[in-house]
Amino acid sequence: MSLGLGRGSFDTIRADLTARRSIVPLATVLSVLACAAACDSTEGGASSTPLGGSKLRILVGFSTSSPYDLHARVLARHLGRHLPGNPDVIVENMQGASGAIATRHLATETRADGLTIGQLSQIGAAELVESNVLSSFEILGSPGPAPQIVLFSRRSGITTVDEWRRAPRPPRFGSNSTPTPPYVTPLVAAAALGLPIQMVSGYATFADVRLAFETGEIDAVGLSLDSYHTQFQTADVRAVLRISSAPIREFDVPDAMSIADARGRELLETGLYLMAPLVRFYVVPRGTPADRVASLREALEKTWVDPQFLADARAARLSIDPVTFGALEQTITTLGARTAAIRDLRSILQPR
Image (cartoon, rainbow, N blue to C red; front, side, top):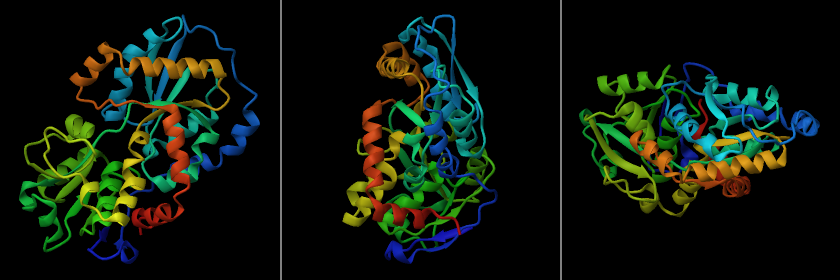
């Protein structure tokens, strides 16, 4: 249940990761859907009409206590105003397997009529490339990347990257499952920067990770700024590193990209920075009528700059920096061409 990464090449990574439970990879879910999507693309699509009198559903694959759910609920309060007919918008949670259950439901059991939007979460670049997500879904857009931060407890005695590098034993990081930011962020950062790390994965919930942090069972955690504000905020932390090109006002720490060498920057960009907007993005099933897709894309873009929505998002301490569907599709294409970096990331993140 540990992974030691020294300052040597990531090709010599020594791993001994044992997950406490199995997680269904999203790539596995979507890889079997490409044929079905092609076969069904002419079926089930309703003509696009104003949505007045209808309910628009946002399907979220995570619990009601998660930042994913909070984002969707803030969005639901405002999205209907920007759609023809001003429909009611509701959020439905279908948690399990790190979002894979909701993804499968959206791709195989949901009518392609534009009345159900899915909030997907892609964490691993290799998994994203293997999933061929564009074969099953039309991408609508993303509220944008949430900055990632690496936090150490006070009792760890580590306050800087240099102290992390010189730690007498690899610091213990905690994660509730493998395809989540607390698992991916620290492992990729440590590999890119040649830092020692021991990953303790498989906690049942993120609340268990926080408890382990507070009791000293683990030394550190990597998480999004949204998760910190909504699930983790505590005085017993010292930020050491950020995964964000823009400064974070409350955490004056270096950006990982600024202290990496050329190879490390490629790993960071491929595994974390390009992936950041895809940690939370919205889709509809492939086959949804084109005018309904266009209407939903336009409504999301309007909502994400709506002053009332932004006021609610600020009050909830959520990060909003919208990314269009076109930019997300280009990112997926770019990642697909980075075969060497994807291969290395697969090795770095593979539980053993």
